[in-house]
Length: 88
Picture 1 (cartoon, rainbow, N blue to C red):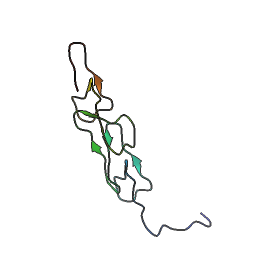
Picture 2: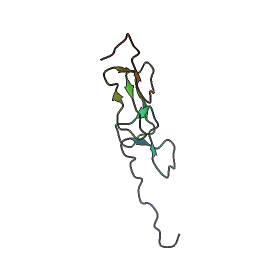
Picture 3: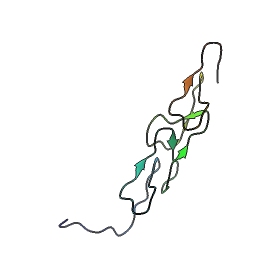
Picture 4: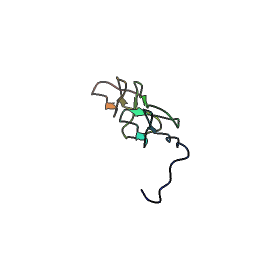
C-alpha cells in the first residue's frame, strides 16, 4: 500500500497468545483449556487436572475453586461435586 513501510523486526507475541508457524502475521489467543505465561511462544500449554481456562488468551490456568473439580487435562470449566462428594 502507498505510504506503508516494511517491518524492520518481528514483534514478540504477548503472554496469553502464541504464533505457531514461520511467517505469522498476528498472534493467536490461547484456546479454551490452555494458557501461556511467557511471551514469544509457539504454542499454549494444556491445563493440568485440577485447573481450568474458561476464557481465551489466559496467561495461566486457574485452580478449581472449592467444591469443584477437573478430572481431565485441557478443562474449560471445572465441574461441581455431586451430592455426597466434596473437593477443597
